[in-house]
Amino acid sequence: MGYRLSDGIVAEDVDGTTVLTISNGDAVVLNEMAGIMLESLLEAQDIDAAVMKVAETYTTDAKTVKLDIDELVAALTQNGVLSLGSVSV
Image 1 (cartoon, rainbow, N blue to C red):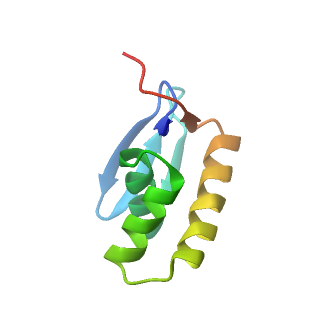
Image 2 (tube, rainbow, N blue to C red):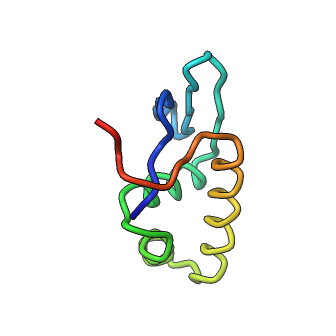
């Protein structure tokens, strides 16, 4: 089971920056690399698959990418932006 954006969160790319808009109008802004990691995480089945995709695409060591993705996941889940589970319809 992978990650998904929480209900009410809308993601959009604004000139290489990912803006996550919350239903109350607040926003979370991610830099380009964090946006890429989030996109990989949302497309992958799990964190390990996202780590491998980012590490291979950007020829970066997987250990560093894993630490960065773990930090991103912790921050986004703590703020209610990211949830574990399937997409609700």
